[in-house]
Figure 1 (cartoon, one colour):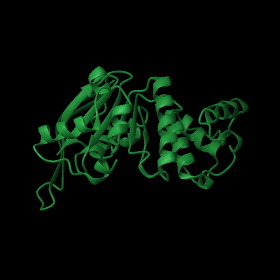
Figure 2 (cartoon, one colour; figure 1 turned 45 degrees about the vertical axis):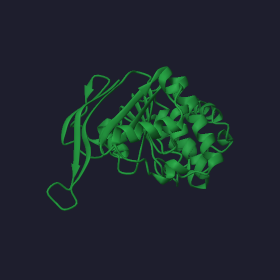
Figure 3 (cartoon, helix red, strand yellow; figure 1 turned 120 degrees about the vertical axis):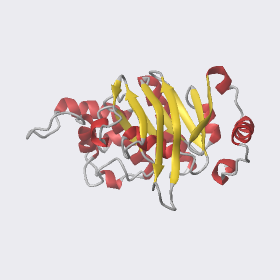
Figure 4 (cartoon, one colour; figure 1 turned 90 degrees about the vertical axis):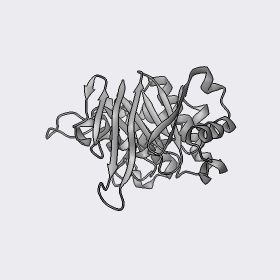
Length: 264
């Protein structure tokens, strides 16, 4: 479903601030793979997400989604293949529009625009059913403006919007990092239910190593713009946080000192 071939990215080339963010990344995801990604700050996790989404152009290599080479496509064109949820709950929704209007925009993403506007009764019924699956009571507030929602409610809605038309690839970039622990756990539970029920090909960046172990069928560790560890199946299920710390030290030759990960 997703192939990343020899992709590299350097920012501020030729300046004192030159930064090699990605170094010859090669990665293949099968249809339905749920991959968690961990690594210290500056490891290249978010840059990898941005390269896939088309936020920045790649320096070299190819990005192929479901057989389509999107390497030169704009972020807008890749939107037909990709769903994405960001760390900031304020992103991904229109705060001054109603919940049902946000869902309608997401549902029509990639379709041709016409002068016709409005949400049919059938669509309202569909959105109400979808919102009910979140278990947050939003199905009774469909005409409420999204700006009135809490961070957790908004992030859950953004997740629903990103998957209302099944994307080829779902990108989750630390999408629970800005939430309190209880809300984060709720959104992660919803995430796992949506991803597994729809069998979505998913990449999720997290700073919580236990989350990375518990969720998904595959785990990738990044360091200095490279993938230094890739584990899946039964081997992943048997991992402990201490194992990941040891693997990092072995692969990178240095101590894992990311405070947020150690605190977790």
